[in-house]
Image 1: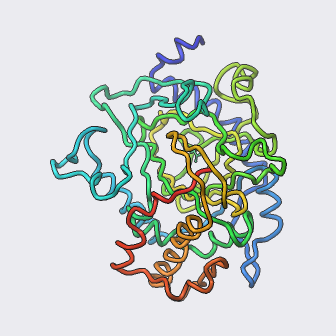
Image 2: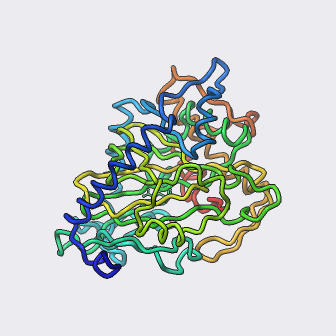
Image 3: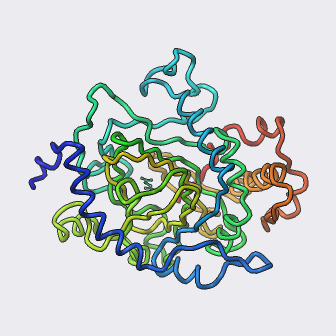
Length: 386
Ligand SMILES: O=C(O)CCC(=O)C(=O)O
């Protein structure tokens, strides 16, 4: 199939092609030995075999992390936020004609894309991080102009996401991977509506440390990806296992070798609703247009090793240049302590995570209506990007 034909295919044909590719990918995924429940010893240390599987493959799927009630609350909150989206990128009102949420926080919370499109692949956007365009099938319903494909700032948008952020098991996993002084990156939601969700073309994340003398497989941190609906081979993020160890990968060459965007050796990160993946940001990864009948909503929360962030100057994808001094890092990290308290208030019997860098401050940081305004609102203006 030529590139031109690929761009013109219907959503049905795309789904059929994906179904074939998915069989091979699912087999790869099932044999990696990198999924199971969270296993921590009594002091909260992650089981070594889990860490080994994460570092070997670049990801891990934690089963059964979120209980049904918490999952329901997360889903409801996402839907509430989506209901308040402007009807198009430039609109100021939502679908009911009411003022959209846009104006209540400084950084616009919604990102839009054309149905089943590939907004980044093959463009110079985001420093050309996504070198190859994915197939953009024609969506079934031509009347739909836009789909919300991302939310930015989960923690001030949704209380349930703030409580999830303080989850003791997730924070213990972050500590095991990045060290006890791990620091935050950002929190976004990827929304892949059935028959509409756009592609995220193959890429590796990370900007600052690729050429560093002490570069290693964990240099650009990882993302938690909490799945609010099943992550299937057709709607999932796909990865090239082990590629986080390779340094900068020539993605264009990989696509050429494979003959098309369906990379040889790649696999989907599949799981059930309420499960949480950990994905190394250096892995080659991407997702295809969601021509399937199944919605995916993923809450991302990223963390870095502190030494990779403090006093590092980074040029953000939007061109802004910033240096993350210690005050900035500590100020942004306080949201971890706030989330721990928010979670403790909701789940008082649960183990409470102790975040080492703020152990002397934790008691003074409490979640309430005052701190919602003074600490949480616009917290994401302090996000850090490396
Ligand atoms: O969820 C997706 O489709 C893409 C995720 C991604 O690219 C990322 O988390 O870096």
